Length: 160
Image (cartoon, rainbow, N blue to C red; front, top):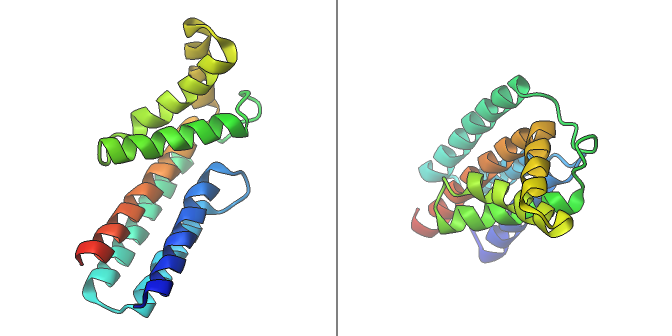
């Protein structure tokens, strides 16, 4: 597979990761479609293994998300800025503490945004709890799944 194909795949995956944070954009499906296109263009066993793993992980993620309360982000006072901070915190946590750092990074991103907006620790903690209850767990589940798939793809491209 050529460098341009890998770059295009990476851009679609990145767009999918951003799409997880945007309402109405099927971010996880974009990530899966990019992995499928990569596996079809580069038919090696490792590519097919990543595709099968991505499919299973996305299915399990959907099952978990169906059991969580529905997203009501606007009702909980969560806007695009909060989701941007949460996504940046999750990505930073994922890189600094591989895999497990995405969860505390997501929550820390929401807290940081609310602390800047409200100015006090207690109010920021309350706003963070409200954001997580109003759909933050659903967004975190989908984002964490897409980050796992992205890490598997990067590992397969670099070391596979």
